[in-house]
Image 1 (cartoon, rainbow, N blue to C red):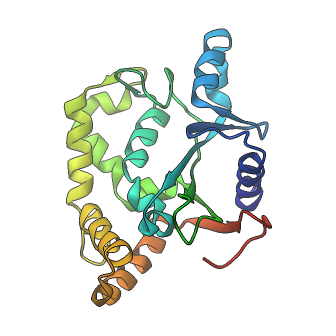
Image 2 (cartoon, rainbow, N blue to C red; image 1 turned 135 degrees about the vertical axis):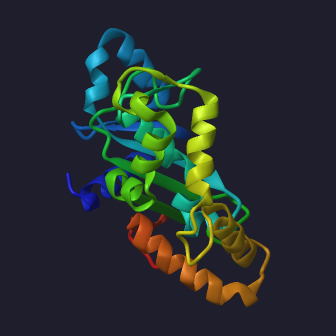
Length: 231
């Protein structure tokens, strides 16, 4: 499947209410299953983890900034999915399941606005190629510097303090028009949700950097007609 086919598939699953809230997995046979279904299936068929090619996060938001910049809003998925792809496991009941995801290629955000918004009939689907994103935010180097030789091993658990250090180093970089991830997120939040229109120049530069760093494939659908529209 190419990017267009994947986004259309996610839209169709959303349209038929087959996609569940929050955590879902796209398999290489084009099916999408919930996180809970994936975990149950893994108990009987451990090889299912090798069939996962996409992590689909489906949620509703009250903020326009989340519709405009879903990857910026949910940046922490990039580090957690990358670690799981490289063979590391997260402590506790991880939303990514109990096993590595060696063939994971995409993070896919499926975002709608709540019923009180003027955008309540819009569905935003944004697909990010995981390899492109992690390389552009220097995540492989960061993980290697934090984990050391441990970064080359598989099926080892990552401790909370290690994840925190990886995320802190990622957040310290000024990759978004000389702003960090968190500060860029704050600027677009204030522009779109607090009506701080004087920030428009900064938002424009952040948007350009966002496209350069994440290279998202994005489609917005009208949920009444299910046709692509301009947001």
